[in-house]
Image: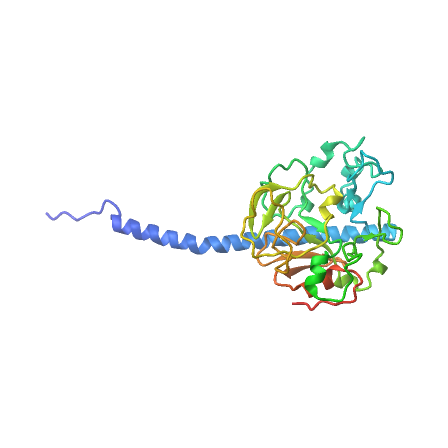
Length: 319
């Protein structure tokens, strides 16, 4: 009587072939999964900015002016030095954050008196881009990946080769604030929508400056952190948009906060005083009309300055 041959299982070669096929499939699927995840994160990031834009317009409807990028304390004292409130703090009541807003006294510095530090440790999810890293160095306070674009640095003006004044300059000629040069006092004044002569749809209001308090340069951090970088502090928008020498190797040396100035780039170069995101090839921008658009990192200085300044008379070419 013949006995039929039976197989106990797969041979080693068959197992290796199956494992190789599975590895190839995973290798093909993983980028697709990551791409879908980033698309979802980018959509959430844009929605965050749209909510800020809606709050900005509700603020303007209520007060007849846009919030200033930095709310200086009226009675400046040693205690209140550099303790001004951010535009985001001023927008809290219009972002359904009334409970948090009610704990903050705008007449006092953000760490003075009843403005206890504990409320600033609150994370406001709307201020955080999900594409940005979640592990941030030495960060106790709630972060923000969005900040007002207050104006253009002299470096950006020079790189643009446009006939714009560098004295007193364009540093506070963005949409959410202006320096009162006429009276030469250390106060900001609010801007009305009617002051935006270039048009709300042509002027940047907020931009991504993601990753802080960590210092980021060309996709790499150097284990250095900015101090007091929370959503509450007006210093989140202290510096006008500038341009950097991007030939410097990345990462920057430990203890260095930004690369030298130069005409290399302003977008996704460094997050010190440039627009910066963790999206591929550009950043999300909130415009004065409340719309959110994607701005490529290849935009030149001339076009960028036309977007940043509110009444320079130069229109950008949409790429």
